[in-house]
Amino acid sequence: MADIVLTEAPAAARPRRLGAVLPARVAYAMAIPAVALMVLTVLAPIVVMLAMSFTDYRFGEDAIPFVGLDNYLQLLNDRTFRRALFNTFAYVAMVVPGSVILGLLLAVLIDGLDHGGRLYRLVFFLPVTATVVALAMVWKYLLHGTIGPFNLLLVALGLPGIDVFGDRSLALAGLAVINIWSLAGFNMVLFSAGLTAVPQDLYDAAAIDGMDDKLDRFFSVTLPLLGPTMMFVLVTSTITAFKVFDTVAVITRGGPRGASDVLLYTTYLEGFSYFRMGSAAAMTTVFLVIMLVFAWVQARVLDRRVHY
Image 1 (cartoon, one colour):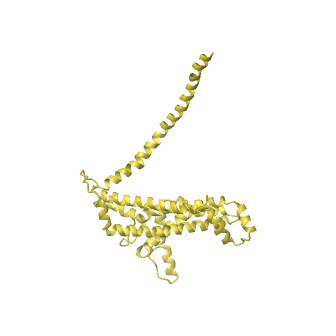
Image 2 (cartoon, one colour):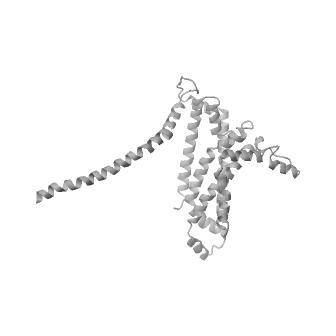
Image 3 (cartoon, rainbow, N blue to C red):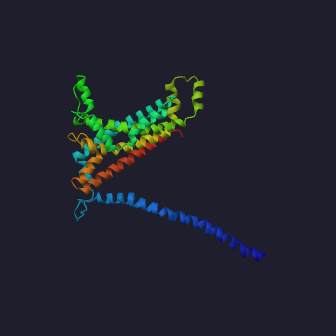
């Protein structure tokens, strides 16, 4: 009887082993298409770009001469690249605080309404659903130096007209205003979702403790509990601001006289107008490193101040 038990136990256990191994193999097999797609569309282009940044490859040529770090060293002395880098940081410094503060303000104001909250959220979210090129064309017409409604209104009031996108001191700020306006609605929705997660009991406890002022309750209760949402909004807004391209290409094309040159637009011109793909790849690598550093620093610094 003991022999029968000994011979049947492995046979009974064998299907369990096969059943445990089979789902893992099936899972890996089902993940292969997604992994292959990610490698082909994300990782492989990055590797090719990094390799190309060490060459002097020009679009359409057969030869791919290796130049080492020459492309990166030339960027240090390139006035156009330095100007584009400065303009990009200035643009980000305007867009990120403006879009975050405006989105938070809209979310708080709409959250305090008794009626019409959904309608206002829909209205402010509409710019997010439109294409960037369409928005850029509308804003280009509205702020046009001669036929724009904004300038016509100023002239009707007896004030001098303002050519926002034709003035070197205003062009970049005008582009920043457009992005702030388009990003504020998206950030508003994120903050509205964060506000719904704040327990009402905390507001009641704050009121019992004598915190009757709404600003005190906002800075002492609401804002700390919006920490995770704030960190996400800051990171995504920073990445979006760094990736500005469409509005520059449609409205100003880097002008007037390079006042609105940004990093991605300069990279586009370098690669697809001047066909210097090696130099364009080096610019893209610098851009990628800047994005990674900013995202890492923001996550590290803000994560220490976030209450989960």
